[in-house]
Image 1 (spheres, each protein chain N blue to C red):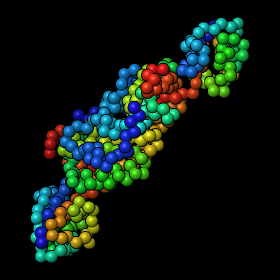
Image 2 (image 1 turned 120 degrees about the horizontal axis):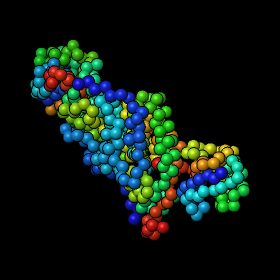
Image 3 (image 1 turned 45 degrees about the vertical axis):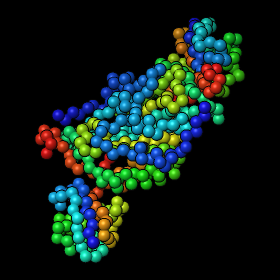
Length: 80
Length: 80
Length: 146
Length: 146
C-alpha cells in the first residue's frame, strides 16, 4: 500500500518538503509509521505538538493509515 | 418668556405641526404647561407615552421651562 | 515605521458619527475605525425587513432629532471607549430606507475579540434605547407611499 | 411581492465560503447573506496588527489546508445555522496580507440581534479552533521579506 503525506506550515519547514508518497507493506497506525519511517523522523520529537488529519478529518496517532489515504501533519491552527 | 417647542414623529402628527414658539409669563413646569396651554391639548392624553427633552437633554414633566429653552415632545425611540 | 496611533482622540469622534440620507457602507465604516493597533473589528448592521406586523413594506422613513441624537451618541461612545479601550463609529440612515438596506450601523475596533464584540453590542443596545430616532412611517407594498 | 427566501439552501453554502488571495470586502460579505427576512447582520473582521511579539511587521503570510478547511467551515456553518436560524458566511484571506487589512471575515444574518451576535461569535471561535489555517510567516519591518 501507499499513502499521500502532506506537511503544512512549520511541519513543511521541519520536513523540508510539502508532500510525499510513502509505501509500506500493510495498513499501519500513525504512531508506528512515525517510529519506523526514517524520513518522518523530523516530526517524531514534535509528536505532542502535531495535529494529524486522515482524509481531511482530524485523527489521533492510533489511527490506521490504509492504501490511498491522505495523511496531513500540521502544527496547531493559527488562522484568524 | 418664550420657549421653542419641537414635535417629533407621531407627536408632530397629533399636533399638526413640527415646531412652534409658546409664550408664557413665567418659568413653568412642563406638566403645568401641558395643562394650561390649549394648543398642546392633543398631547395631554398621551402623557404616559411621551418623552420630553429640554435643551436636548431628557427631562421629566416636573422640569421647569425657562426663557429661550428648546423643549421637545417625542414618542418612544424606535431607531435601529 | 511603527506607527502608534493614539487611542480615540476626542477631536476625531465627530467624523465617526454619521446621520445621513445616503446609503451606509460597511467598508467605509471599517475605514473610519481601522488601525494597525487593533486586531478585531465587529460591525452590527440593522436592516429594513420586508414585513412589519405581518404586512409587506417596501421601506421605512426614519426621522431624527439630529442635534440631540449626536449628543447622545457621543455620550454612548465615550462610555464604551473608556470601558473597553476600543474605537467606535455609530451611523444611522435618515429619510427613506428601502427594504433590505442598512438603516443602522455600529462598528467597534479593539485589540482582541471579546472587547470588540462586547463594545459593539453595548453600543447597539444603548443607541436603540437612548438616541432620538424614529421609524416615522412604514411604506406598504401595493398601496405605494401612503 | 412578499418574497420568502428559503433559509440557507444547502446548495448555496459554497458561495458563502471563500479562501482567497484577494482582499476581503465587508460590503461583499454582506451581499452574500443579506435577505429581506433578516433585520440584523453582525460581521467580525480579524485584521493584521502591526506588532507581533513586540516586533513591528508589515504583513503575515497565511497558509491553508484548503480542502479540509472548507469541510470544517461547512460543519461549523451547518451547526450554527441549525442552532440560531441564521445565514452565515466565512472567508479567510491566504498568502500575503499586509498590516491593517482583513485576514478573516465572518458574517451572520438573523431576524434579530441576539442570534446574529451569538452565531457570529460562535463561528469565529469555532473557526479559530478547528479550521486548518496558519500564520506561516511574519514579515518583519525593516528587514523586508525574510
